[in-house]
Image (cartoon, one colour):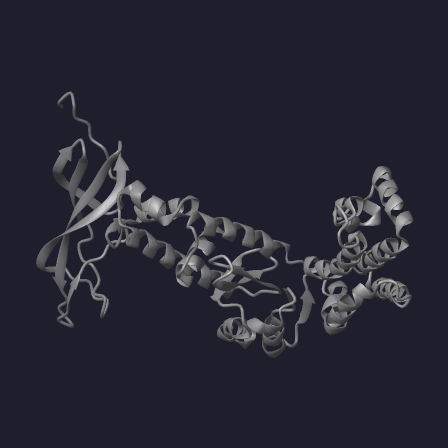
Length: 397
């Protein structure tokens, strides 16, 4: 053997190396052929060994020592004797114009980087990498949707900031993304549920969503048997809006004053959102000072605390007791800013109070998924194609 020569195995099953075509520092081309003697006919399945002609196919493989590797596949075109059909042989080691192992590497790299970066890294076309990612995502999505789902999480996210939206649907038990449906209306969610079929929908016992009326309409039609629960985080934000309105009214000073607002009240805006059981003595003392200056602020803070107790209660009876205490505070007439909060609660009271009966579910898993999707969107500087965004999202999650 020459000094500058070594032999390297391809490690491809049922592939035979016939020789080296090009062995240069910038590329390596290897001629290969299949060792399957009688491939089966795709029409009738009959094995055939009668060769009609041969064709050279260029197959990209993983790099070796930084050199792009191309396999020149001596591909046979065969004739099936029973049906007379001519067909080209296939091999499980090849996926189109790349080897199966390179296809797996491309999909894995597309999870950590953009499709364009993965294509440049392996010196292949963007369309090839994107097609592999989309095909893989379809298989993964079909596999996930075949399983029964007991808790369904629904939320929306944007593929371009404040422009195009998708409905994200997640299995609450496993945290797996089931689908990302274009748009965020009732038809988007209803179409997905209809495609899953009545048996799959019947297995869903709990649905968690935000306060979207469109999602509510779709859930009532397709999942009327399930408990519809509002996400706790969204409900608390609705409740906190009343305290925020009171605080803004109190901190406002007469026109022409400098500054135009009470700095102490403004600086306490985050502290006021804390629950009483989360305050340390220094923070409680700071709040007591503000409450002494304006008792209405204390009333609003205590009202929000009772609304928090809807979720801190051990059961639904405790939640109703907290709601009664809030009603007593609201009836004093000191916090009319909570009127919108009351109206919202009356419109969604069944979905809010069912939280205790449904096992205290949360949209936390889908919020985590949405954070990953927003990172993906920033990497790509926004998406315009729903299919590509869904494929990349399933790959990422």
